Amino acid sequence: MLRKVNVVTVVLVSVYVVFGGILTAQEARKPTPGFGPGGVPQTTFQSHRLGTDHAEGITSMDMNGDGRPDLLSGSYWYENPGPTGGGWKRHQFRTVGVLGEFVSDCGEWTVDVNHDGAPDVITAGWMTNGLWWYENPKRPDTMWEKHKITDSYDTEGGAFADLNGDGKPDIALAHYNHSGILWVDFSSPEPKVHHVGGKEQDGHGIGMGDMDGDGRVDLLTPYGWFKNIDANNDKWEWHGDWQLGDAGFPIIAYDVNDDGMMDIVYGQGHAYGLYWLEQQREGTSRHWVKHIIDESFSQSHALKLIDIDGDGVPELLTGKRYRGHNGNDPGSYDPLVVYYYKIDRKTGQFTRYPISVNGTGGAGTQFIVEDLDGDGDLDVATAGKTGVHFFENLKIDRVPKETRETDILLDKNWPFEGEGVTVQQENGPLKP
Image (cartoon, rainbow, N blue to C red; front, side, top):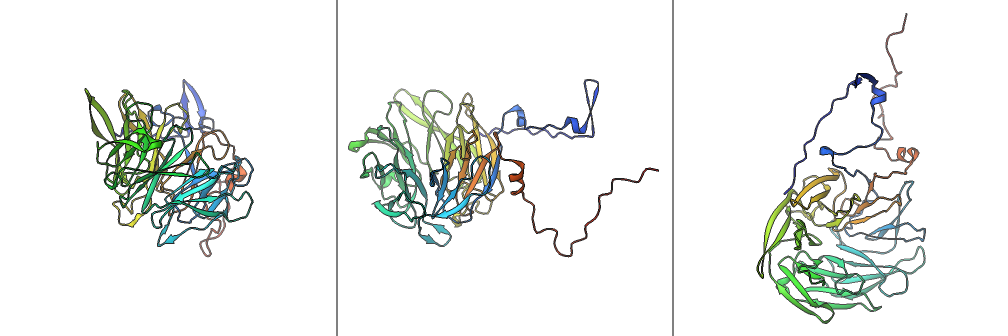
């Protein structure tokens, strides 16, 4: 359940009395951030809108060899200015398919597909068929060549993790048309495509995690999970344990209440609701108890489990996708939000903290979480129909005031013509 955090309002006055002494207002001003409500440390983020294109997938890599991770989304990559801040310059490196409001780009992943030492980009989309990879030309200002890996129709998203235990990440894809789950092994220069189960197990949502504690990573779907017997040789055992609906990406496996049994966390990608299913056992039988995390916003299409505040315990990161089905999903016109949730593993309670609320940034279909600006803390990046956003973690802030001043919210064309005249500051009546 979502724990409510009480907010205490503090009224500041011009004179402060502390232990019998008197402090002026200037002396009492707190110069650095403190804890959030309840004395809980809270991570604060500054939202930066980098572009306004509509691609919803996002990944990162160093595109220009300067040692900094740049952001890639759709046709473009955004050049990282580094820890002292500044503008993220947009460059084009490929072309994409466009239909109405959409870019055919539900996911992007960075993989050295052909094993030539240069990272490539893998993409898939809902509108157009195929899982594709774009080959890194290893030359600046050169368009990347497109190669098809396999058919993949109505692709809604994917999960990216090591499924077969070879130490290298694989991609598993789910499909809205229930055409069958597939996963791809990139351990050799020629990607190897595997198919899992039938149409009835495929759907909106997919994830990876060791559900039974046998040391092998299993596949999670909206209708249950495939026990990994031997992934490389396509041996799986089906368990139809749940019905999740249009789950977000990925479906997350995590022992929420620290009882030694793997639970799952999932969002509703096209409706309201964020939930976790508690795994319980009676002898050899397994059943699942549904718990509400948050039902206040809709279209939780992207999720990530990551230790975002550096306390050693992962947080749940999610938010609202913008117009996943144009304006036809519940809550389509609600404000955009991005949140992280701290998880109390003793009680199974989730406490919500804001990254962005009622701004232009949403969750899109993927999250990037890494130290993008190189200052020592983890930042967040998303893409969507409202553009690419970089959420700068302010726990460590090395951006000089001069740079901050170039990015203030004031309209530089103000005051408007005819609004008024410039006046002088009046500080009170003159002394006699």
